[in-house]
Each structure stands twice: as C-alpha cells, then as structure tokens.
Length: 387
Image (cartoon, rainbow, N blue to C red; front, side):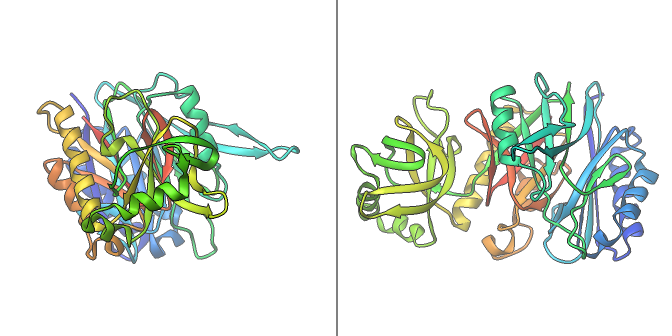
C-alpha cells in the first residue's frame, strides 16, 4: 500500500474537543490505515491549553511520530482560518516509507556562536519537514549549513507564527510541548515533490551583475546598479509599470547552469537600500559577479498565476498519478490581505491536486528550495506534495 493521508479541521472553542474533532476527521480519511505520522497546527485561544490538544490527538490517532506548532492561522479542508481559534491535523500512513522525528536546539557558546544539537542527519533522505521557532532557532544559518551538506533534499517548512497569551512559543514533539528550537521530520522511502510559489511576476530584461559582494550590487550590465535599475524601470510598458507601484523586488538566479530562466528559478528578495553617490544597491541576499537578476513585482494576479503554474508542474511530474496529499506553508501576509478574500491558496491547491487532502498553516516565514539551495522566504506558498 502506498502513502495515505487524512486531514481534519475544527474551530470548536474548547481545546480538547476541537482536537478530538479534527483528529477524528483525519482518522476517517485514513480509512483504517495506521497513523505513522501526524502534523498538528493550533491557533488562537486554543494555544492556552496545548497539552490538552496534544493529548487528544494522541488519543484518537496514536501516531508513531508527531510534530506541530502554534500558528497565526491554519489551513485545512479547502479552508483558511486566518483569525480566531482552530486546530488543523494532518495524518499519514506511509506505506513502505518511514518517518523519523527530531527536536533541534541551539546552545549558546561563550564566543557568541551556537552549537546545533538534536538535528537528525538528513543526508540521503527522500524529504524533510522543518517547523522552527523564529526567536530561538537560527533558521537562516541552519539552511545554509543544509545547503552545503544535503543538497537537493526536498526540504519544506515554516516558522511558527502563533504564541500563547504569555508570549511563549509552542512546538509539538511526540507527546511533549516544547518551547524552543525546531521540530522536524526525516522521510525515507516517501516521494515528496517540493514547491515554492514566490507570488511575484518577473518584469523587464535579465541583467548580469558585473560588480557586487555580500548584499551589495555595485554594477548591473557594466553600469552603476542604481542607474541601470532606473533605466530599466523607465523602459517598462505601462502594465508592468503599474505592478512596480506596489513595490519593487529583485529576482536572483541561484543556479546559473540553465540555458533559460523560468519564473521559479529566481530567488525573490526585496531592495533594502541604495546609495545615490556610489550607485550601489543592497538586496536581502548574498550576490556575486556573474549572477543574473531580473526585476519582480508582487500582486494578487501574479501570485495566483504563479501558484497555479507551480502546482501544475508538480502534477505533470506525477505522470498522471493522483497525489496522496500535501502539507502547506503559506505566508501570513497572503490570505485576505493579498487576495482580498479568504481561502484563495487552499482552494487553488485543492483544485490543482484533484481534491487530495491538504493541511498547513500561515507561517512567519516559509522554508523551501530554490536553485538547489534552501532559503527562508516571505509572501510565498510552499507546498510538499506527497505522491
């Protein structure tokens, strides 16, 4: 038997009853299969009793492994609960595959650096999920380390976005509620297709960095970077110029070993500064000479198109097979604030994946691969599609 996935969602105000309801719905969709892995997301006032939520999920599903986190909003059953209280449960029977859960923390050293402990060895894994506390876990540094040690691993996840009334983080690990670090899953023998939809449209021509170091671009196409960006914007057609009014972004090609660059090949980052005297501009990513960049702009229409296109590519990769389900990590800046209505991403994913069960949460940062590296994103929808 292959992978089977079930999901459940509840907005009942009582933590235990909500968790029982969501876990029971997931159990029904598993249709008698043993739950080997559960992922739980909890938002709102239900975070006041995380232990009760956790106990109820174990009571119904008795999973071999479990992780989860507090959320600013949850996703499940084609719905997005952005405000209020809710529990979303994702449960899986992995067939011939296996899942190994872990809790990773960073111990401070006298020199001001940190030692990573508890992180499972991910080399050779078929996939991994990572849920990190944004305060106590150096996600960017860990992702750089994983890029060097475990390239091409399908790694997907997000930063916990919900906290208790006492401003404490909530992470779930097995039968424990933990308050720091990150929780994750190593997957073996499971086919996972990662997807990062950055929700931004490329505009203007591709430009090559001819001088740059660190976060600073000195020259583009042999001209001071700021001058070249101004020239590029002035030459944009009216429809693209309209998009720029909502905010200008830069897409940076991470993997240059391609004859052509498609929308998903760019790591999209914001412009964070410019110096009119030197003509330099600063971006929120490391750059170097020879890299190709292209201006990007973000709006609801481009975000919708990018998400549907990325999902279509994953369905094509499945070769006609129906996906077992998906885990979804959407930026907490999407939802109503981006699309003007609720449920956009949840509905698009349900449509594209032929109704396969999906669950997730609105994250404070999304983890996903671009160009062979792992990055922390914003305003994206990152999805792990399970074959």
